[in-house]
Image (cartoon, rainbow, N blue to C red):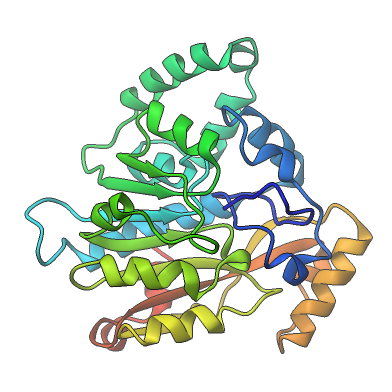
Length: 304
């Protein structure tokens, strides 16, 4: 999720917490000015040249995980997805619509989109997403500290409920706690570098029944504090060790040197990944031990 006080950040896949975790990503180019715009056009226009792509990698993975974790044990309807650091609802757009990441990029950088006011874009997008809605669409809740971004996502129908809250610095609202009760899958494709157990504790305490947590995490930071937190709620965390996922190209030699050093310090090998000019993420999946023992994380990387 976003906050105005940050001066260093990873690009927003879905928002990103700022401020207290700045030192963890201090070698990265700041993209703060595209986080809380009234609409997503600057997001795609700025990130496109750097080949930002994590939502693309996550699209099929999240669909397969959602199918595997099934419906909420105490809910009559379909499962709820909670997208942390949701920003403009990009993950919801890809999860619930017959659209690809390339489709969204082309849509928001098109001459037609460029010529519209934000109000006109919201009207256009509402029809655009309605026309591409999948019949198996699920309920998605968005959580991000960027109020303009979540307002946009809610206005065009991407999010069923949207909360502009930063749980790193403030308690979860009663409305958020109520909304997440039947969550079966929590997703994160950007911002994990800025998250801590402070965000996850109130959410896990509010959710009824089993839940899975799927996170694409930059290899420059440790996911262990979050995994340790989730363990206290009965979740076992595994990772897709055999594969990493390109996030975006480096904007400078300085960024690359930072990433190579950070990945090496974490005990990982940057050769063929960060050494080739791209940040890479690792997929982590936290779920009840019975589920983890039956199906490896790698099973969700490819269609059955």
